Structure formats: C-alpha cells, structure tokens
Length: 452
Image (cartoon, rainbow, N blue to C red; front, top):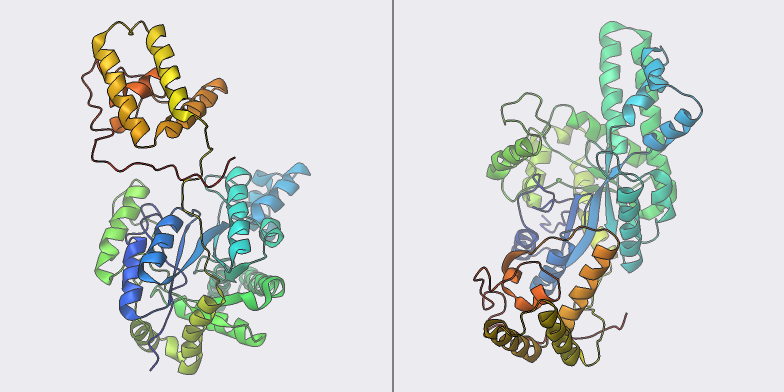
C-alpha cells in the first residue's frame, strides 16, 4: 500500500503550552519517512515559519506555511445587534433559542485550518493575522468571514478539527438529535435542525468561495462522538463532490508525549492534570502518525463502518495533492538594514561627544575601554548596527514607548551605554565587553540588501 502522506495540520512548541515537537522534529521525521512536505499550523501565530523555512533548505522537505485560525463570525453579528439595542441579558432569559445561542457563541471561537498556496497567499495570511490581532481581539485574536474572503487569493482552506465551524455544528446537531430521541421534546428537534442547517450552510459557503482549494478535513482523535462527525463530514463532501483530506491535528511526535502535552495544557489553564474541567483532547492519538498508523486507526476505531476504505485512501492521497499545489515560498534572509555612509566616523564622533557630556573623557579607564570597543565593533562591521539601534531606541522614547535598561550581555558594552541604547555603566558594575562581543565572534553581519 501507498505509504506517502503529508500532515496538513500540526502544532509545534510555538503553539505555546499546547505543542511539544519542534519544526525540526517534524522535518526530520518527514525526511526519514520519505514524505515530500511538512505543514505547520500554529494557534493564531506564524512564529514557526522561520524555523520551518530553514529546515526546508536543510532537509529538502517543502515547508507549507499555515495557521489554525480562530474563526468567529458571530461576534461581529452580535455587535450589530447591540448597536440596535439588543440586550444579551434579555436574550438569555428569552425563549428564542437562536438569539440566546448567538449571544453564547460570541465568546466561542471555531478553528479553521488555513494554508498558503503561494506568495500571494502568504501575504494575505499576514494581513488576516494582523487584522485578527488588531481588530478582532477578544481574549484571543479572531478572524471573521468578510476578512477571510477579502483576502482569499492564494489560500487553501481545510474545514478544521472537531471544533471547526462545520464539525462544531455537526456535534451539536448529533447531541440535540440524541436528546430529541430520548425525550421527544420539540425544542430538541428544532435545535438539531438548526445546527444541521448551519453546518450545511458553512460547508457550502466555503465550497462556493474557495472552490477546489477547499477540502473537508477528516480527523480520528478517538474521543466520544467523533465517528458520527466523521460520517456526516463524508456525507457532506460526497453530496457535492468535494474532496476530503485526512489530518491528525498533531501536537507531539509519539503517543507517549500525550501526558506531557496534557501537563502543559494544565499549566496554561492554571490548574492540574486531574481537574475534570481541564480543557484538552483526552486522547493520545494526536501524534505524528505514519500512513499505516492512520490506516490502523481507521480500521480499528470504528471509522471503517462509516465509509469504504477507498475513500479513506483517497483522502490520504489528497494530502499529497495539496502539497503539490503549494508553491515553495522563498525569502531573502540577509539582514535588510539601511546603509549608513561613513558609519565608523559617525559612531566615533557620537561616542566621543557622549563621553564628554558624561564627564568621563578624563578617566583613562573609560577612554581605553572606548578605544577597545570601537576597534572591535568597527573591524567586525557592526558600526551601522549600533547607529540603527540607537535611532530605534531614541524614536521609541520620543513617542512614549518604554525601553528597558538593558538585556543580557549588552549591559557590558560601554558604547551601548554612551548611545543610551542601555542605561547601565558597565565599568561601574564590572561587566565584561568580551561576553557581549568576543574577539572570536564572526563579523560583517551587515550585508545590505535594501536602503529603506
């Protein structure tokens, strides 16, 4: 059987206190298995992209950039209602379930898997993330429908995990249907119908908007009710010939790491691992499985009763199709810093002026230390770097941004103190300049690639 596969939904340690593996771990494992690509989708951040990009260059595995988007369209609908005099408290006391549900949904985020197909998609994802943090932040950054479709070019959308906009509605539908079957109460039938309608609507909206770049995401996490959700997702996809992909929402490399991940989730929530209210996926299946391991889960976990194995195998093959669609994105990783003419002379002059203003120009210790630092910094090509940093710090102070007195070994640099980059006199406190910039350290970091 075909063993090729691409995990399209994975979290690393950059999904803070939720993921364990590093981007390098995933790239190494993919290379070991002969897989062509690695997709990393952190919770609402793109911090792992540099690591994954350099792993791509090192291992030759294609790096697919993406994110697990916190998606909440109901918040913005509720804000419109509030402007019209709508009261949340009154809605909670009313019998109108849809209004109550809308109020409750405002604070509940759905999860959507978003991948960059090309450079335009990457730029659009950057914009979505920026707006989610700036305009959509409510406890967490959140995106909404109009923002997503306004920046849809170059993006591939997967329907998400069990907390995705479609799977969530399906879970609620199944629960409401079960309640109706048990009680026969009309309200549960109405809720079931509403949730199923919303699930279909979301599916159709994504399908119409993203076309062949939208895939129904099938997961097998091994939690109660997931087989039934799996079944309904397959039915939705087959109804309009939409392609499916298998994902595992990986948070760690091997199943044994589940206990560590659970502990990290407890730390994040300020509780303990035995707290019954701990929010986490209570299953050790979210590891970086091989296709054979995924196949075994499909066969042994009850999912095989949902659909034919050929559908599962095709959904695995479709992960390779997605990877083929993605065009490698390359970056110029050289430092992009302004070019400062006669930077060495300017640095010498500024330091001499500041030494005079601080009335340290007659102290031989300071004069000798300044000569030593200037010589080493200029020889290694860091003069412009210090001038640029001074400019940034000065501007920050001028607009009221707080700046720290120092950080790390920089406190041992007299030039940083004279330029007011730091506020610590290294000679007074006996701090070493060699710890900051030793003679053995490489130099000429300023390979200028742009002038703005």
